[in-house]
Image 1 (cartoon, rainbow over the protein chains, first blue to last red):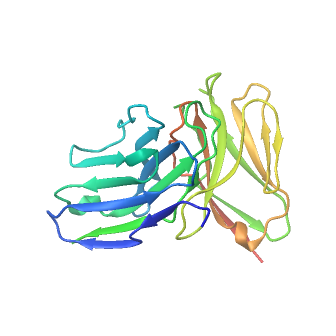
Image 2 (cartoon, each protein chain N blue to C red):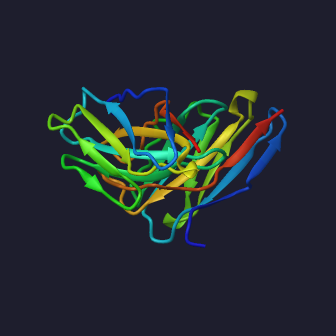
Amino acid sequence: GAGVSQSPSNKVTEKGKDVELRCDPISGHTALYWYRQSLGQGLEFLIYFQGNSAPDKSGLPSDRFSAERTGGSVSTLTIQRTQQEDSAVYLCASSSRGRGGSNEQFFGPGTRLTVL
Amino acid sequence: DAKTTQPNSMESNEEEPVHLPCNHSTISGTDYIHWYRQLPSQGPEYVIHGLTSNVNNRMASLAIAEDRKSSTLILHRATLRDAAVYYCILSSRGALTFGKGTMLLVSP
């Protein structure tokens, strides 16, 4: 497929457990973004990778959240010791250019995380 | 990123044009104006973006005020599939800051 893919599509976990969410960006896209959308809320920026540069982590809500991008392609968002307020749809996007404000971002379908 | 102001919701009839307004009075010279939309249960979808000049693409047109403090997304003929939340976003750094957006309701 040519689009951004995310897995799993749904994840139910218990409070206190760790979870990993995966994003496969569009091939060749150098920029990758993670956002989350809580029920009835707008999208909230979490973290942004651009090529080999240090990621912009300014949106991560706490140190329980971390993300990696291996080989400039696939990214994993890890949430440690999950809390109920972490329940949300986690969206990944990629673009061919990251710097500056003119890039078009392509979003994946999201992972719906439910923390019981 | 500078803030944008949009109406919470708008209604339209099918086949009619729709003008979705956005105010961004604190826009900076490097901010691009982006529009995305989000259909129910889907991720956001890019619609259009511009800097200073009006822009047209297959989905919509973007009219930007001369002072860039406001812009209007124009859907030339609304269809039922255009019912979505439309987000007007200013960005100069790559990552997008989404607000509440405008929920567009389209009636047959």
